[in-house]
Image (cartoon, helix red, strand yellow):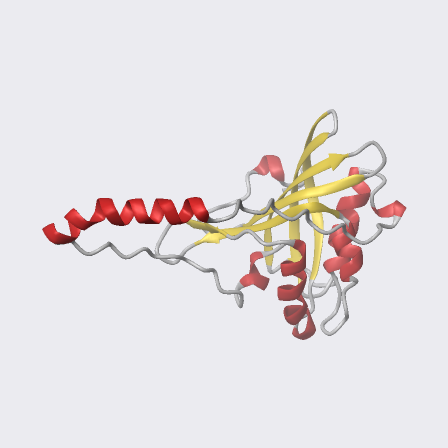
Length: 210
């Protein structure tokens, strides 16, 4: 994944204004107001339990048979020339219900942002970008750790407008959290950040030639 495609996506930052100072009369009224609010809250019916995430489309068995397969499918399904329709059902089929994608990057005012989106939201945002822009992403290095059905992969990526471009326009690291249910592999999260002048990819996460 690359942060470049997210330049057109607003990152919603919520600023909370300081509450105005209350007067003594308002302070005296607070206990009764708080009691009334508590009583009103008690009258409300219990909150409904959270809805279960929708089941994803059926996956191609070859896409989810191994960690190698599911990462290859993820990179393949988002890559293509400008205007090529991506197979978003195939994309959704890779993700466990409730899975999240989290792009991260530097903020102009300093520090970093992280934005949590669902696979459906990613598909909606990215489709408009891919209609006008060619985009190909590939893995160039990998570090993996596994314990039972839990697997974490640092997948170093290179993003190009065309697969034949000699140099990528961006590199970065996709942090994959994978889950094996005994039958197939699932993506739980992809959390990524692109390389920048202030954040260089360490040699341990690059191919040996680098």
